Structures are given as C-alpha cells and as structure tokens.
Amino acid sequence: MEKQILCSTGTIVGRANGFDHRLIIKYKDEIEADGFELMMLKAFYGRLPEIAEELNRADVPIRTIHFEKDITALLGLGDEEDRREGLRLFADNVDMGRAVGAKKAVFHLWDGRFSAEQVESGILLLETLYEICEKRGVELLVEGVPCKTSPYALVCEIAEKYLSSRFTFDTRHSDFMGETDTFFESPLWQNRIGHIHVSDYSGETAEGMWGVTRPILHPGEGLIDFEKFFTAAARCACDTVTLESPVMFPDGTHDILKLNRTLSLLKKNL
Image 1 (tube, rainbow, N blue to C red):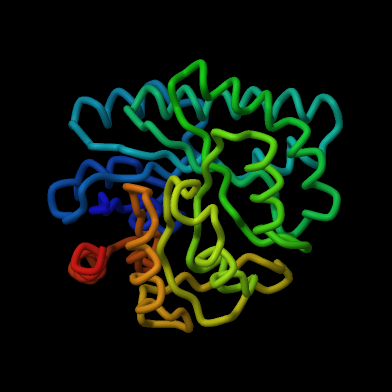
Image 2: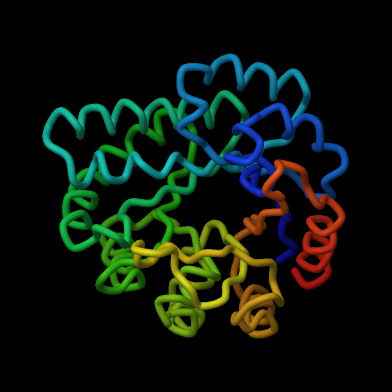
C-alpha cells in the first residue's frame, strides 16, 4: 500500500528556537512531505485555540497529532487529583487534534522510565481514553514505546481486549527493545498497525533516562536495518508514516535540505 509520508513538527520546533509554532507555517511549503504530524508541546498550553487558528489559516495539512508526553506520568503515577488533571490535558490534546484536522493521535500510554508502576494504571484508564477520542472523531493509536517488560506483549494485551484498536510502531523504540522482528512477524503487523514513526539511533540513551533513545538520528546514520524495515512495511496496511528525525541546530536554525533528502528516501522506498 502506498503511504503518506508525513513530517513531525518536532523536527523543526523545539527548545533551540523557543518552541515557535510559526516555524511550521514558515517552512510548510519548503518541506517536501505529504503533510505533518503536530508534536504537542507543554509550551503550547494556554494558547491552543490561537495556535490552531493560525495553522488552519495557513492551510497547514496536519494528518496526525502526537499528544504531549508528560500526560502519561499524570495518568499513571499521580494521585486522584493528578489523574483528573491528566484526563483534562488529554481531552485538550484531543480537541487540538480535531481543531487542526488530525484524524490519528499518537499516545504514550506508558513511560519506560516508570513503567513498572505505570503500565497497569494506564491500561485501566484506556477505555475512558478511547471514549474521549471516539467522541471527537480522532483515532487513538497507542505507541509501543520502551518499557521494563515487553511493549509487544502490552500491545497484544490491548489488541485482545479492544478488537478495533490499532497502534503506532516506532523503528527506534522497537530496535532498542529488541522487538523489531517480533512486530514484523506478528499477526498484528498487517492490519493492527495504524501508523509508523521513522528515525534511527546510535544505541545510546539519554543520561539517567532508561528507554529515552537519544540522539535521534536520520535513517542510515545509526544501527537500524532499514532495508529490512522497508521490506516489512510493504506488508503493513497502515497508510501514514512520520519522519521524526530532527534538523535543528543549537542556534535554532534548520537544515531543510537534509530533511527533504530523508523524506525523499522514505517516499522512494514506501
């Protein structure tokens, strides 16, 4: 199946440039993607309607949204007040996705750094999270991020309980967990993977943060066997793939040429 090749806004928007969402508008016509995945950032809170309006006015084609990652800890590790706040922020993220036209939402239901305490709480809330998304017309795609047990086993558990559920596969995370072949050979691979994230890595993790694979590299710069991935992706029915590899320099500027070279590689092979 031919796939839409998307570009994560996280490739160009980050701390180095003050989390400036206007850069998405600035570069939207220079970036040779079929659309964008909006990376939700804590810096956006308090301005979501304004940001959505600006992106819509500029006709930025946003196909998917990646929910803000710290919601995960509130839902899975916090007390009752934290969980209420986590659910409020989750709903805000879903509303943002709907406002900008995203049909799919990527979400970290657990966090590898805390998963032993967190996974069970997250799964208990999953029915509520699906309901929030369904009411707003956004498909929730739990991402198989690293955990202290097995992301694949958790995906299977959710898939068995929620028969219409689909998931996000991430090249970097699955390689770190040693489960890439497990996913590729799984009966879930063809029809239950709804979205794919692409990036590479060197095998390192951020200091003191197990499972947070940094730095994020472009395909071919790290350890991942992308020939195997491209072959397997042809058997996967998902129709969207997002490049997550950043092109930001420390001064906040960008290498758009490099970004487009990688997008071209994905288009050629997918």
